[in-house]
Amino acid sequence: MAQVYNWQLGRQMDYRFPEAHPDRQFAAVFNINRCIACQTCTMACKSTWTFSEGQEHMWWNNVETKPYGGYPHHWDVKLLQMMNRYAPGQSWDVAQADEKKAPYGVFDGQTIFEVASNNNLPGVAIGYIPPDDEWTAPNIFEDTPRSRGADPAPAQLPEHKTWFFYLQRICNHCTYPACLAACPRNAVYKRPEDGIVLIDQERCRGYRKCEEACPYKKAIYRPSTRTTEKCIACYPRVEGSDPLTNGVPMETRCMSACVGKIRLQGLVEVNADGTWKEDPTNPLYYLIREEQVALPLYPQFGTEPNVYYIPPRWVPRDYLHQMFGPGVDDALARYEAPSRRLMAVLQLFRASQTIIFNFEVKEGPKIRDVNLNGKTWSIYDDTVVGYDKNGKEAVRVSVQQPFFERPAQYLNSI
Ligand code: SF4
Ligand code: SF4
Image 1: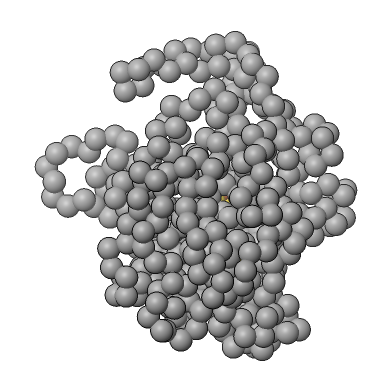
Image 2: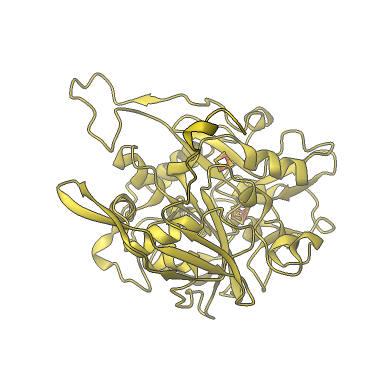
């Protein structure tokens, strides 16, 4: 195995191939706090890519209810339990946090690749192939809550005593994809221009090694073709070659369709060593690296996933720590009382289908002061302007949404 640098873990790790990074990386931020589980994203994807024979149970995008739900059933709990058998007590050394090379500290445990190599397990990563019946429901246990038990103390906001939340899932187009490392036919590849991970259907022989190794279970077997398929990040839209896009990179179907305005997708520039080029006016770079309000899902798996989540405010912190790592408390503190700049950038979510490459904030007047946990927090009517790949203005939106109050005499007319 080669040694590669994983900035989410703050250290080198084992991987089948040596470092090779794309010029830009497909990335997205999902704000869990805003999702209403309408599944519009799920259906936008399904009706575009997976409506054919053999794809009946294939959902490249799914939204599942945590903590009990999962597609396939219990995918994360099963893998975490397997990993725990070989490498119990995984932890992070947050004292070694470094803004550039190790923003969340250093992971002291073992990744899916290291558990396999350290324990002489077969394959490049610890994993499993879910049985067919575990793929049947994309949102099993929908809206089933968990209670903290018979604790007589009243719930203290923001954490709720009885809770659940929706987790939006697509392929993470990982920096170190387990699917790619596991494929004996080298049918899985990562595009050098945008880091999108694809499976060459001509090369694939359906050995399902990618499905076994992907810790997120986002490579899915199709019995009618005997090949494995996965999310393709709507690459014709992202590269601007879909006729709809007029040549300008456009967000994927699931992002564009999002009713809750929870999704923002983009492309970040990557250095030759895999670190992200400093680009504080790229909204993705700003949210993930500068403000650090959005975090990777199960970074401890070691694939360096490129979908990031703003964690849900009302969920017990211990649950969130195991899911999003040690950055949770800081991320939530920043989200609960956003800086002026963050407040503006949060307005960009679902404001345009065009991929925003850069943004600027134009300052507006103060709207009001609010008392937040004993501190004064001010809200301003700033305007955020988003620019496309060519530097052309794509969207302009203000913090205070314009509204029209219908005059009393027209109350019931249209
Ligand atoms: S999420 Fe899974 S299928 Fe997608 S790139 Fe990562 S390892 Fe591969
Ligand atoms: S469309 Fe948006 S709000 Fe609706 S389920 Fe999908 S991510 Fe959630």
